[in-house]
Length: 162
Ligand code: SF4
Image 1 (cartoon, protein in one colour):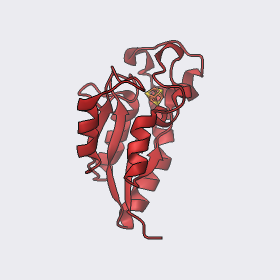
Image 2: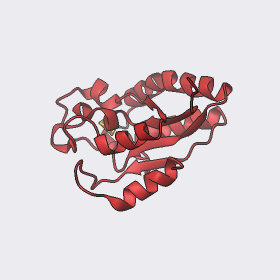
Image 3: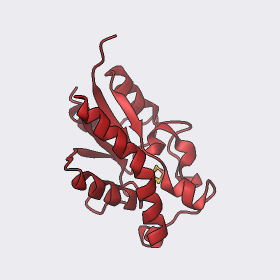
């Protein structure tokens, strides 16, 4: 079977909303409309880990970036990023196109807005060390599964080069 050789990197909870802080889930399982669009384009996915789930657990309270910003949490993020970094390098070495990173706006860990989340700060540093530059896009704070979000999906089309 011919491969499209296109891959997108996703924040963990785009594929698994069970990982988010309880009151903040915005879909029952996954962000189905987003994932379906990626599937329709036959783009492969690399799911980043969820550091918050592993650090404070499934029933953690909402926590600020300032509170997460400890050497232990940054170390956890760096450890968890080793696997995706190896995958990205291996795919790039073999001619795959990594379309970019889709994060979660305003997350203390996974935001890709100007004020990055801690995982994304560490990810950006690891990518810079490896001389890899990737486009980024974030799921908007007002995204809710089942509700129309035309402007975001237009941005997603551009991001996926549809
Ligand atoms: S840490 Fe990242 S992956 Fe985990 S729930 Fe928060 S935004 Fe999603």
